[in-house]
Image (cartoon, rainbow, N blue to C red):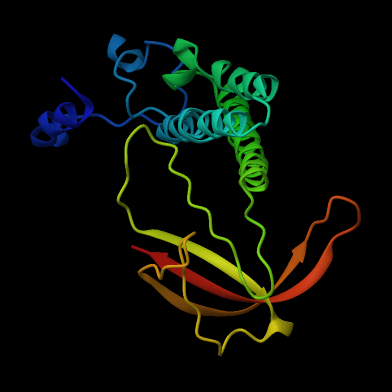
Length: 219
């Protein structure tokens, strides 16, 4: 069976089911099954678990390999650190959701730490790969890199946000997207507006900036 088939088989019997609220920490509530059928217990934890696994398996680890193939390093220590937070949430009673509220709150923090580590690491890896393959742009040009970290070819629509300093006055300039050979790429360009944001340089305090933001849709 699978989860979809299981839930479909339950739908005709929804009126017969009992809803439990609070901590399911024993079998004294209404029989042994409260600690067995835990697919719906603390569902937000299972979603966080999926997000953390996805960030590790399909983003951080493939990008680490790609960075290594382009002359960078494979940062196994940081990946191990992220995996440790995820593994600490995987014991039976924890991921099943049949634990105390205090443990559940700690699990949320560990899931988020794992996701945040992968997110920060992935952006560093993207910049590293970009530097190694020469993506520097000049003038009013912007370089767009699209990464496919799955195990198969993709044909999805890709949406990317691109920003120009407002001093460049690009909002009224017709923009186009070119491939590495200078050929036009099928794309829609939408002006999203003028935004205030901070830049966070490595060597100084944050810098305020106003930018014109565009959304590029690639087909």
